[in-house]
Length: 211
Image (cartoon, rainbow, N blue to C red; front, side, top):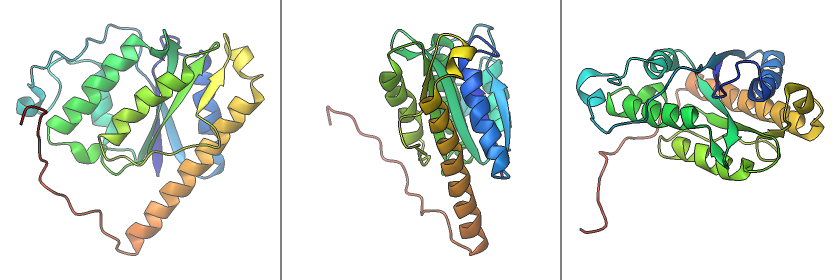
């Protein structure tokens, strides 16, 4: 069982990384493998709604989004970490999430994400964490991914990694999140061994508000 931890910060080893590292350390204690995937600092374009992903099987922009999509099929769960920029996820992380989730779902690769547990980790100096937490969780809800929680909202506070390490409650939330994720993965594994099947799929119905 493996968890992919996505670092959506422009700083490879900054506050978001520090929080994700606490998660990774606890997952290891629970005998769960993990890997941190940094989205980097190169420009990540927003989705242009060209819908080419449905035709060619991947996003038309060949960048870190397609790299993530290929890795996603190898992992059993995901945790997406982002700093807070203006009470929302970073611009790069928002573009990354928009394009990753849309292109994977539209290209016939929904099984890369569907039914796999997910969580978010939010890092801020002071405020905007709960708005960002709500934002990121919406990606999971629309993709049929079970959302894993902690005993508090999954957030840490601090302006530097050193300050984050002093956020005792925040780091405890990271550890509890990791243990809850490990528990859920082990339950899935037990269910699989018992032959419990995934939920029956219905053909998706699309409507709008003028019909």
